[in-house]
Amino acid sequence: MKTSMLALAAVACLAGGSALAGETAIRIGVLNDQSGTYADFGGVTSVDAARMAVEDFGGTVLGKKIEILSADHQNKPDVGSSIARQWFDVEGVDAIADLTNSAVALAVQGLAQQRGKITLASGPFSTRLTNEACFPTGFHWAFDTYAASVGTAKAVVDSGGTDWFLLVSDYAFGIQMAADLTKTVVANGGRVLGEVKHPLNTLDFASFLLQAQASKAPIIGLANGGSDTVNSVKQAVEFGLVDGGQKLVGLAVVISDIHALGLAKAKGLIATTAYYWDRDDESRAWAKRFFERNKRMPGMIQASVYSSVLHYLNAVKAAGTDDGKQVAAKMRETPVNDFFTKNGKVREDGRMMHEMYLVEVKSPGESKAPWDYYKILKTIPAEQVTLPLADSKCPLVRK
Image 1 (tube, rainbow, N blue to C red):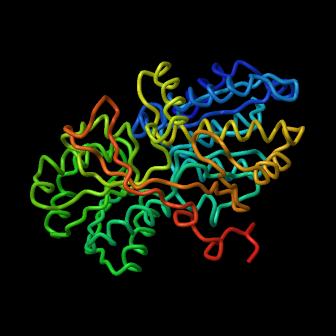
Image 2: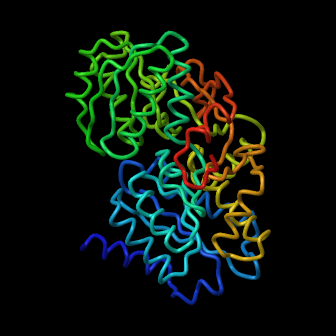
């Protein structure tokens, strides 16, 4: 309770307004982890990406100033829910973006559904957000567990990596990721020889990695993210798993993870990403602006937050209202075209369909400059990395 009250106090100070503010401003809250496991995954740099979207849009819409709020949910669903409730009911917030951490995102999405408010999920990866838990004003932008399993796992199995052991973060995201990956591996002729769950934000992976090593599985799938991915890769290298011939496959890797690891430890890691800053001229131009402000290159979460916020604001302008349901309808009608993706499509279940990229981390000798970390092995069409509507459990989908 004390933690929740402190978080709410921080929000109130940051917002500096009242429920009446929503009548004179369009308010977007960026709610994510700013101090824990996922602080580099999205964190304060995602807040700045949202600000960049507002600046590029022009700062006002429908005669109202656009304001960005932010708060740290500390990876706790109760804290995230309390902040979201305060934002919606007191601060006049119209939309909440990022929402890194699937458990928090699912809790906040339930509150938004009750109020007809918009959620723009970038950081959480659970497919439940646009599947069983979908609702008319909920959107999922960057990446999900289906994309990771189909994009990364299928490519690895197709190249001969058929036997897997899974290291799984023990909450909604990791569990869903492991389930989707197992389904993909088995469907493509592979096997999952075992899995072990670890607590979120653990520092000691020794017992978990020893189980992975003992399995003798050639492929170790990391169904975790943020500092958990960084620490598990570091310790896997230290314990000799990589030198022993086992290959690490990251299922929720962002470029800040590679930066934290260094190429000497991360080289050869296979992953799927929704965005790479060095992909083309347009992505490089935006990344340069982001770097000048944040002194680091953006990952797919920061790029996705920008894209989702900008698309939301364009929809508010086109709809001529900030009413959540009308804005959501306009978001679905309008293609997404920016540096993040071209001709992206927002489906009826709220999933934004866009192509993704299978990448391999370069060795130190292959990298020509700081943040030159990825080789793009394959561009994956949107249809191949998005759950088919025929398999959807979303009640908004017409069967």
